[in-house]
Length: 369
View (cartoon, rainbow, N blue to C red):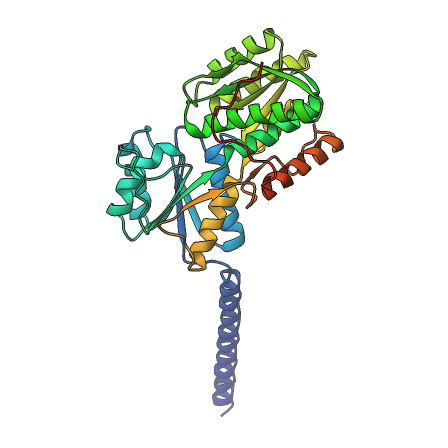
């Protein structure tokens, strides 16, 4: 009898332990689900262009927008760097992303134009964001399908603001411009910069000059050594500040400026696309040779398109322009090398561009002399 009672007690104890474990497991599962609550079923892929993911330019700006979407929206992200820079190289990585389930694909730059032209038909179930370009079949006739959005920027407005900031802060001296490929986005940065300096000279009493020989398109976006050489030539010729819109070529110019500043020279760089202040930083001196940067809000654009897709509002088939009016271009919110007075002046000019009181031309003007 006692043995029977003891056995029943043991069984009851084991049963209660099993129930307790079951409850604990249920609680743990609930916590896991809670941790995953922020995740969404969207896999976003990116294919880089000739640069690296940390190029302080287009690739990095685009990728930062994707990473922000991961942090704030819960998407899954992945990027692939192609072996080359031909449309076939880009198509290969687009296909690899698609096969892996990444059906929302962001591509930075005009080099993807013909690849996206092909991809939007080959992968109708995918969505494509083409930054700074439009799909075409080599004939430059835009074909933006319903699964693609094409994004452009008013670089001339951004360059104009950088020109204003440069002139107002430095007051006088020679300026230079180093571009990469001589293509519309780079040209518009140059033209806007020239107009900004001219406007400041005429309206704010500044005396910045920009000679024809100091406006150079290097011909690539990845020749760092050439950027250093060109910047050295300009600085040796008396140039005080160089606006670079040249990717890796611009990095070379930044390196040259840092070397000279470390030796005591007063030389400056105006960065491009993203805030390049950190790229020009001398850790020992705790100062940067980046005066300011002419920015395109690439990260914001990438983030906005991902968010639009999640909200069922993807603007497929559209070509979007990001400019001063929708805060798509500008200079950094914080510019440690600009005085409060300069920042205030730039802000006032920015508002005039937004209101239409100042219209910046998107074509070549008269070169400053």
